[in-house]
Image (cartoon, rainbow, N blue to C red; front, side):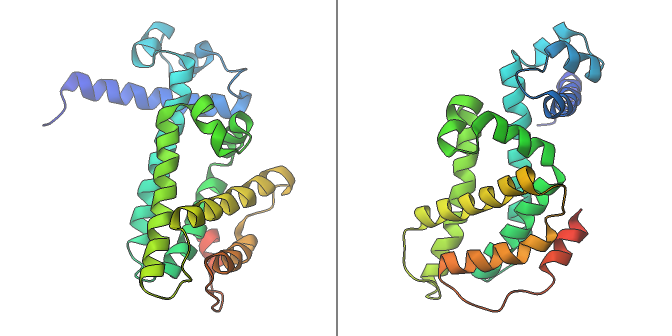
Length: 218
């Protein structure tokens, strides 16, 4: 069913607010951000903003939810081109690192709120963000199951392996934003892919063009 004109207008306004909120949150952090500044940047009244989002916490959760959904949708499209589970993991590394290189401020904000720990996502970001993170982990676990089912990967628990892979991606990104001194992530991609192959127990030649692929995404 086609949304009504009023619904379309509300979605448009919500998008403007989310764009504005992401910029303000990234600049000031969650605690120092005011709803008034977000409303000003979105060119809306504070009352109109509260008609769309009930609180600053709800707005912050919606900002992250939009990016989490964008990441998951992008990963599904990107990996749909691959048939090899190993290549899927390698492409997942490239896509995820390049995505957060593009949205560095958002990743820094995520770290400031959760300290990078999975157990902090639910209490600090809410149930919806926690469910999205679990969806990301299940997506990785599905690739791991596929690799094991085909017989090329050593048998292990797919969910545990997914946690390790996600943890390594988080560690690479955390190190980059804390001690990377503004250096591009591209040169580190091949290193990340080699480590991922060791984690899943498959040793092959490192794929060419990994760093170049990262560069092309920026």
